[in-house]
Length: 135
Image (cartoon, rainbow, N blue to C red; front, side, top):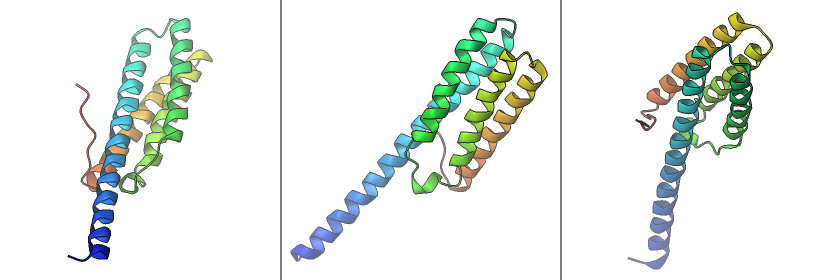
């Protein structure tokens, strides 16, 4: 085999492996962000009278939103990623609503966040991609 052809084949192989690694990293990150979002919302729902807990949960939620915005999105997940961000942002707004004394809005936004998560997962599924299970 001649050298230029071998170089091109090697380059294509590296790009393919690199693309899969990026997708794998993205999916692991998304799974972690979603798991933490759901657990946080569930915990605060069962302790909704604890405003200090809600304050801490809100701070952590803001960090998740920031992290979600900063993640490198692989081509395979470009259509789904906005729904990941909407999940994180809805959860953050839900916790803010609880801190503002609006428990009904809190519950409505938690439900909205879960709907966005379902949409995110459905779009990934259409691409034949699934999130790793953290259990």
